[in-house]
Length: 277
Picture 1 (cartoon, rainbow, N blue to C red):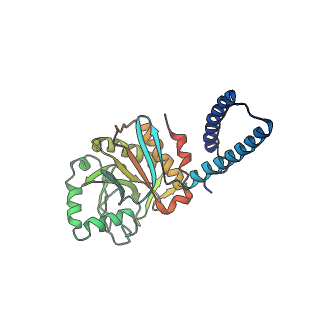
Picture 2: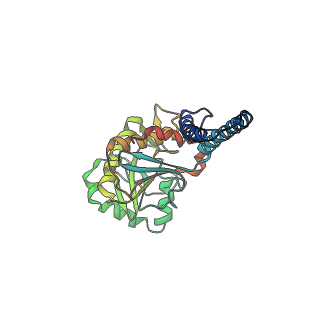
Picture 3: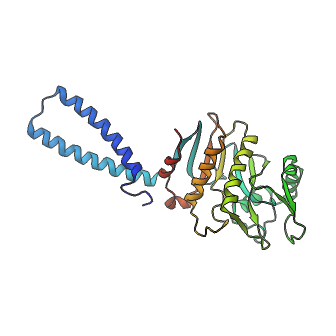
């Protein structure tokens, strides 16, 4: 089980329920005379109920599919699912720093969200997507360099975290690409990228609900962090949202969609520690 039996968060929930039950029973016993035998039976029954209640809280914490967090004044919902089928006004999809669109399993793999997005919406008209990207005035303001030596893919490199809006998707420059077209990041790059991403979201979201996957999960090599977990990436995403001070006004919110097959490795309850209210 991903949530331990004596997890402090479960204990806090249980103590709260116990205090409510204790107050109610104490008040009831003030007005009702109960014999010794009845008190023993009631005590044993209460003990069984409390044990069942604790186990129920523990099981629910392990099988729950979503959790809502209050971060500053915004609502953040973390849930298991599929980013493409998620109900949201805007959805973030990670691209590399070149905003490459060549899905050939060399530059972009078909199995990545990046590749799935391109094949799903622009498979027969990648030129249209390239035109939208090249015509984006904001992107021209955040060009980092031109890599004329690149043999495949695009040559213009953009600042990490930059967003290009394409219909209801937020294409996001998330990773560096090396000479062999492998995605990589330093952990400091990742944090700075996320901070810039939230600033970019603040620029474009216009009161809409934004959904994003666990950015960097599965495809990115973190130099110096060979075994970084999705749980850690998820916590960094939420932490950078918190420090960015971006505010989503109700009913808009942020949804972080964790791939459903990773539910056994993601402790949603632990994310409650990141709440600010």
